[in-house]
Each structure stands twice: as C-alpha cells, then as structure tokens.
Image (cartoon, rainbow, N blue to C red):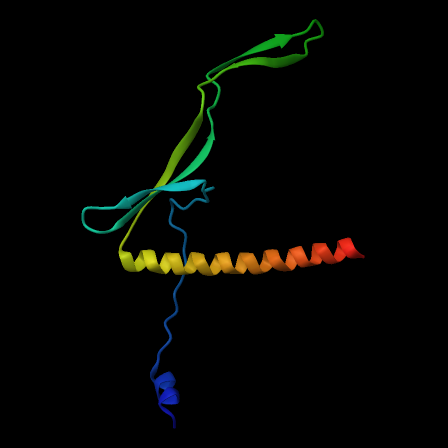
Length: 124
C-alpha cells in the first residue's frame, strides 16, 4: 500500500451544516472601505451606492385628476450606505481572496464561452 493510500484511509470526513442566522440578508455590494486594525486584523466595511432619496417633491394635477411629479428637492451627489463591517484575521483574508479569485476565473471562462457563442452566431 502506498503512502498516499495510507494517508487517505486515515483521513476522516466531517460534515458541516450551513444555516442562516436570524440576521442573514442578501446585499448588493458597490464597494468596500477599510484597512488594517491596530491589532493587525483587516476591517472591511461593505457599502451599496445610490442617489439620494428626495426630501420633497411637487406634483402637478391636471383638470381630469391626472398627476405628475415635476420637481424634486434632493441633496447632490451620491450616498454610500455602509451595510456591514467585516473583521478578519490575515489567514481568513487570504482564504476569502483565494475563493474570490477562483470565482473570478470561473466568471472569465464563462464570459469567454458566451463571447465565442455570440461570435459564432454573428458569422452564421
């Protein structure tokens, strides 16, 4: 029996259950802000980006009762809603980096296949 066969027979599998916490939610991520903490961990604040909601609006109503919003009072610029803060040690950050890198490679492969299919359709 080879060393590899001995090692694989001595390994045990552990089942891991994935459950959603009561505060679990899906978020759209526009970006992140953060850096290293004084203790050497990485803090990453995740944000979604949007326009300001109007503070007020004016509505015109014609004689038949149809209405149309015609003027909005709103702040200028964008809002970055800080959705969640993530704190992780360097090992976890590397694991997240590796996972995200693998997903980006998968997405690039998929995009290439779709581009090739589209190009093939254009030549037909």
